[in-house]
Length: 192
Picture 1 (cartoon, rainbow, N blue to C red):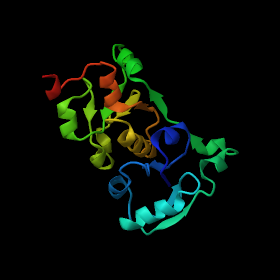
Picture 2: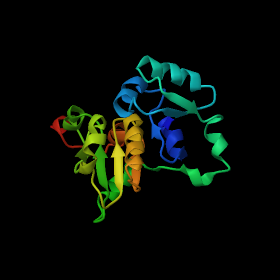
Picture 3: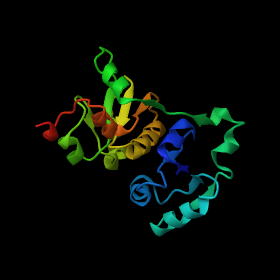
């Protein structure tokens, strides 16, 4: 199941087990990295977007679109048991939580170069490109805050993590961009 809605809509309510790759972002490159060509794809999109999704998937060699959720997520309103939500956290709230003894773990899914340039102290860097193959390296045993630069890649990562059985996964709203705009501290080359 491929949910192509934007990250905020996906995190607000999505079909359990769906992978999120927003059609409005870097759709083709991430679809090529995350999806398996051998598996049929059922698309979850805003009504009227299904054909565009099929065309864009076909352009990158994914010809196995099995169908789509007719009517989008709205058709699941009588089935709340099939719908899950992803918790979100603001940068100031996370900064506050990081000062406590039971602070959450932070997973930064940006590229290594982005991470080296500046990151939240104590974060673990595991680029989205490698996440599925290195899932054993993801911190466990405490809430996991996931972020990227602005929120697109973190939503993709969260959907992968949820599919791998992670349940206490939280998205940092606005990613590192909002963290820095909030004048919160980072470490790395850019802090000099």
